Length: 197
Image (spheres, rainbow, N blue to C red):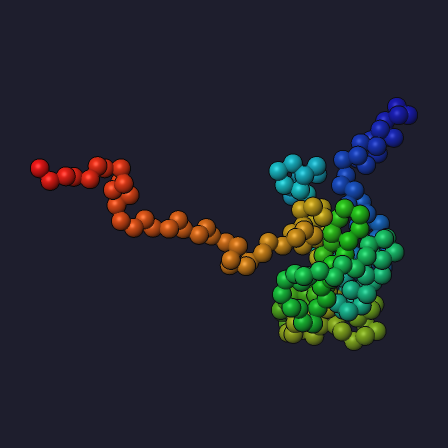
């Protein structure tokens, strides 16, 4: 009976993905980690496909403040900013996208405003304490665009296309030069020359 509880916690710790455990340990304020949704695909041991982890989080504060909180927390945990091509793949405006590396992992941090939802006139809106101070409460019949959304994507570095050499697109390195076309009769040297009879 005394060994059941430690065994339970030991099994749970062994089966929990260590990346999500590390993300849980990020020192971000409580307002920056609401409604966490985790997703995972691939193999933990990179069999056929390496594991891909994604976490989506809602924050009560604007994207600028939320991005600063997450970047500070990542730096404290040993992550280092990673300047690499295709980070992001497309330019972003009025949002924040950055890439990070630590040990054998790469991390993409994307912080953006939420998708605005229409607030119906008969729906009550309950502003939080922060909204009351800043005056950000949504008016009835308006739109609810408070806070921000955070997406964190973590890959094994060996499975991240941005870590290795990129293939060349030099057209001279593609295709094969065709064999020269034969001219004349290739069998003419093998046949005896006819003599007049």
